[in-house]
Image (cartoon, rainbow, N blue to C red):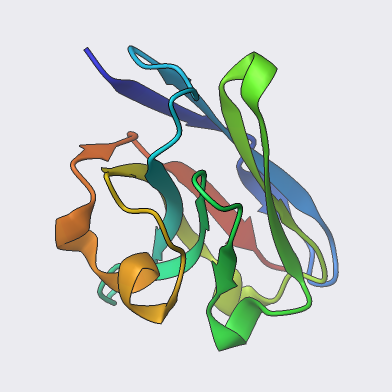
Length: 131
């Protein structure tokens, strides 16, 4: 059974940093024909794709609002994907989810934003950016 568990959320002041972790179980990072995505849902808004990483070719994608501030990475030995979030803004507040899209081999605008491609989801981690 595939499980994804997020951690690392919390309350941080504007300009601060957080690192989210997504630990996967029930499958291994090898073979690597899948994509891990990070999505977030702000209060009163629809969930949106923020960043994703394709394990097949290592390609990554970031939505414009987080480019230059967020970095997605992975540690195959730990079956973990990270989202390093720097220079956080109040508009980054929301529940952050990691998800897996099996068979997706490329990270781009379409694959990172199409929720229907992702069949496994974590429970979410709350990130609050406030002074």
